[in-house]
Structure formats: structure tokens, C-alpha cells
Length: 148
Image (cartoon, rainbow, N blue to C red; front, side, top):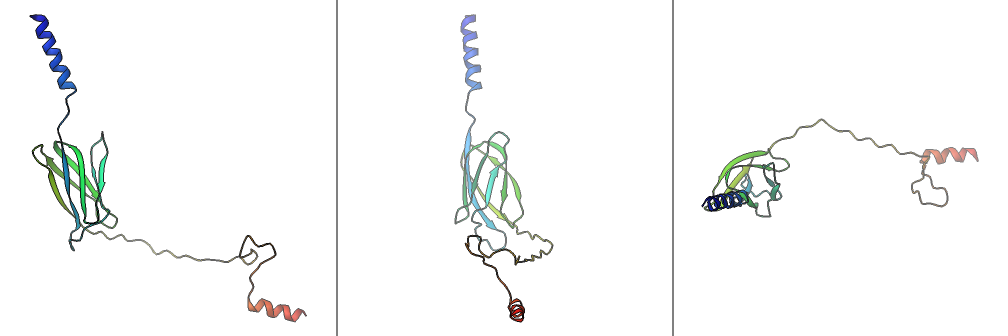
């Protein structure tokens, strides 16, 4: 009898140790907060330290995440030109979770950038030329006429 109880207990512990945790699918849309237009290419990532599961929104702003563990889960939504958003949702095993997410535009301010180009006249225009090739201005040609 003791052997039977020990074997049953060992089998129960083994089953619980390797049992699959229930998962669910999370889907939804990502849109602009003001215009309600879909944000094509916006990304959503499940914030879990052990696995990386993420998706990008399609042409209609729809996304789908599979194999999300049941329970309270955090998701990070981001898109260029919009504020990042972290939302918490409770995932249940009964049905799919549908998230309709709206992102707010953010303004990025930067200092002015000035680009200045300088041409090196002693270098040829085309590095593959076999004879000398150099650009010169009209003033340089008039100086050469005085030399004649």
C-alpha cells in the first residue's frame, strides 16, 4: 500500500511539473487617437522576461499575438511619431482578448541642422577617368587667356 501511495504521489508531482500553462490569443487594432486612422506598422510586444512575442499592425491596423499566458499581462505599443503606451490586460482562458488601442501623437523637437558642402577643385569629378579631368570656373579661363 505504501508503494502505491508513493508511486501515485510521484506520478502526480511529475504531471504537475510538466503540465502546460494555459495560453490565449490576443488580437485587436492600433489606431491614431485623433483621426481614428489605422497605424500601419505599429508594433506591440508582450512584456515577458522569458519569451519574446510581438507583432506589427497590418494595413488595417490589426495585430494578433498567439500563446500569451493566462493572467495579468503587460503589452508595450510603439510607433514612430507617437508616444509609447504600456497597457495591462487580464487574459482569461475562456475567449480571445480583443484590444482596441489608440496612440497619441508626440512632437519631437530638434535643433536646426546646417549642411555645408565644399567642392575640392584639385580632385577629378570622376575617379575612373584615364586622363586628367578637373572642373574650373570662367574666371580661371580668363586668367589663362592673359597668359597667352
